[in-house]
Length: 200
Image (tube, rainbow, N blue to C red; front, side):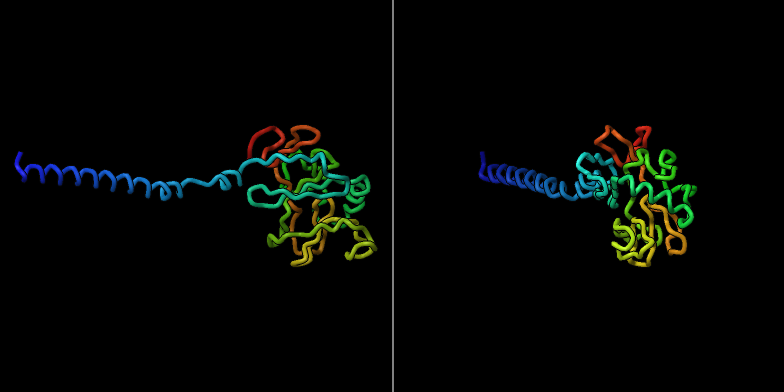
């Protein structure tokens, strides 16, 4: 075999090896680029239903979870809290929840499947601010002697009762939203699935 032939074979071999390594490198470099187009696990989970254990929520207590990137309040109401809702029909805009701010199964005075538990999106219906929990009643609160407990939006002064119903004469036009939810048992709920079991 001539020297020219050997040199050509070596060149061909080196060219093939270099091309192979280059293609493999391009493939490896492309993986993160291609993967950037697929939604992250967090993004997938953001729209998924969320299961919550409510067994540790004490009467009069509220917990906050996240569903679809929004705060969801879960309040375990006491008998006194439920009674305060009955006393406020004349002071709220939509006492019977005629506006579609809740699923049909929560379209009642307490805006709940089980009266004891209130489940609301914690977003003011005026401009999307975050209202504050103000459960203290009357003179023990900073809301005035007539306050029976509820939620107050400090941005523009909107007030909501312990069913998330909006008071008359405040900027928020409608009640706080009740998200779709269902009970899996007495101690577990799922937010993002309606009572009939369909994901929303």
